[in-house]
Each structure stands twice: as C-alpha cells, then as structure tokens.
Image (tube, rainbow, N blue to C red; front, top):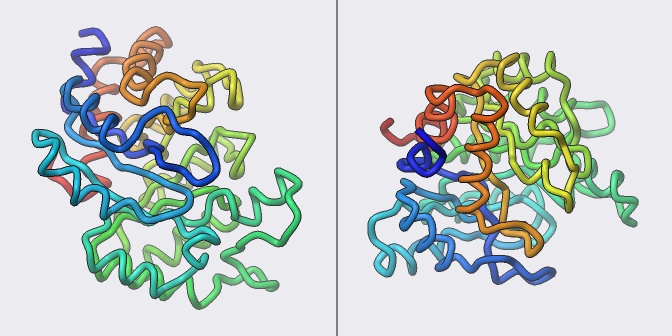
Length: 282
C-alpha cells in the first residue's frame, strides 16, 4: 500500500488551526476537517497554544459529518497556566486532550531567550507543584488524555510518575526529537518514558526546513529502537510555510516507508495507537 491507502482511518492528534492571535495558519478548523475527511482519515485533534478548541468541534461536527473531531487545551499563560479551574471546565465540555505548557513553558522560554520566567511544573526543590497533581486528578476524573507539551525531560519523568500514581493511563510525550522547542530526549530516555506507559509522538514538522531540519531517518531509527507499539506519528502541521496537515500526513507516511518502516508499523502508529491514546476503539 502507498501513503493514501495507509492514511485511511488515521488520526492526526496534532494539528494547528486558525484563527491564531499571533500568527497566520495554513488552514482553518473547517478546512482541516474537510480535507481530512476527503482523505479518508478517521479523525483529528485541533490544537491552539492560546485557547481551548473544544467549542469549535461542537460547531463543526454537524457541518462536517463522517470524521471524528476532538478538542484540547494547552496550559499556557493564555489560559492561566497550570490552572485546575480551566482544566475542570474543559473536562466538563468533553475536551479530549490536555497539553502541559508549550511556548510559555520555562524550557521554551529559556531556549528562545525570551524575557520572563516561563511556567515550570517543579518547585525549587525539584518536586511537582500541587496544582499539577490537582490537574492530573481532573484529567482522570474527566477521562482526558495527558500530553507533555514543551516541558523539560526532568519535568516529563516527574509528571509521568505522578500521572501513573493518580491513575491517568493515556499519556503522550510530544516531539522528543525536536531541538527548537521543548527538550530533546535521548533514545534511552524515550524507552524509559514508554516503559512508564507513555506513547512517544514523533511530529513530521521537525523535519521541515522552517523547523529543525531533522533527517527523517532519525525518526525511523527512534521508532525501531523504542518500538512502533509505543509510538505515534503526527504532523504538528498548520504553519503557513508547510503543506496542509493532510498533505503532511501523506508525505510523512511515504517518507517513513522510504526509511524502511513497514506498512504494519505505519498502521500501528497512525491508526491504532492514536485511537488508543484517545480512549477510542481500534
């Protein structure tokens, strides 16, 4: 099978949509949904660094039947950071995924040389803040999925440990091979994260000229080392300079095939694992 066939039934859990208050986006939520449905995809998650996207899905579902649409919220400064009240309200309206801080994480702020402290999950002694545990309890209560966003590797390990203690079982470590944002995780660290029950999400955006220019073979190597059973392929597309998310997924699948990843492994990483991390039937 080629990429268009393998795309059918896939779920992209990482798509950026317009409107965006700080930058132009390649697609609106409506365009992303229409294009994904036309490609035969099963579903997409809409992401913003600045606002909760769940209400958009309520508007779109009657307009674009035949595809599953999910919303999420990133715990950045715009929603009050590590804000349990915002997480509870998100849970009450059926939000599917909660990301830890992204562009306003301390890790990102320091990496980009931006003025300000940024948001850390840890106190000065290296322990998780009480708000984080409260947020994890809400994620469990409202049956949501936890994603790590752009936090540091030490924060990721502390978060995964506490999440398991609280009973959160659907976990995603976002783009561990990226160097321009978040923090890069070694293969051994990725294996440990997978052993903690997390899916390792590899995003195609890292290979783009406008991003990290990561050789795609590095993603293939990480998949082989960690195992396709513990990995998810997402685009993280929506940037103006990149192809549309749907075209990005087609390119990604074809590129991974070229790098030696098997069709069965592709199916696992674009269909089965994304469904499982969202609590959906395979």
